[in-house]
Image 1 (tube, rainbow, N blue to C red):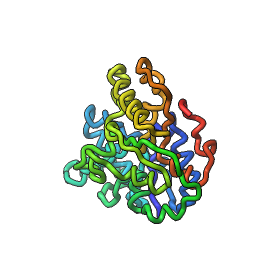
Image 2: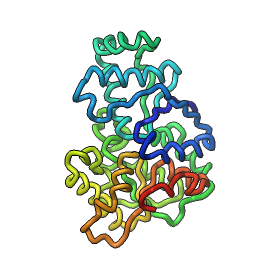
Image 3: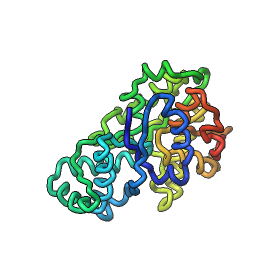
Image 4: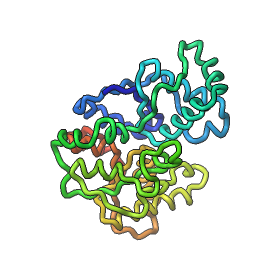
Length: 281
């Protein structure tokens, strides 16, 4: 199995352990991820509002590079997923916008055609690779450990662009946890917002959302939170102490990346997977 891998900004800076973990086990599963080293920032959830055409050119180019390699494009960041898929949807349904983007890509020998899909790492593991196949690769089952799955907004909504999980009752991450031998817990915030994207402009409101999710997970008696999104991880790990200040919570709760969860079940150590880099361990 071979994919083009989109290097998201957050993984290149604040959450390097996501890709560090992934590089530990992708070959265990015979998954080849070709890093898109010439790719550029997707613009997060902002560029499309500030300059819609630049948003399409930037992300059309990212996808076109995967198309040139005849590979689907994979990301491990929820926001990159939503941004890239939104651009793809527009370009696939607007010949005029596609022509505009390709006029800029011509000098690089690139051409956006729409032939490559854009996927999240979670989808690759649960759908392309398959949970039955993954179960046979588990060497260190996560038995006796309970996990609060936190999906994050941008892998669920809007379902018209994403559509893999029911945004009101997502289950893909739950099923992955079970496949790895762990126990997923049900709690109210599993499909809620972590607050990351308002952190710089409305810190109090952002930290309230973060604290709500963490408090729900603690009340569910989970041992860990696990998320497929590095931005959600940053909000709930790096800002956990600040978000929980004044709430009277009896304990802290560690937060794992999706790639670390899989790595643990495949027998890799916490140090190898960068878990010791987290603020809450």
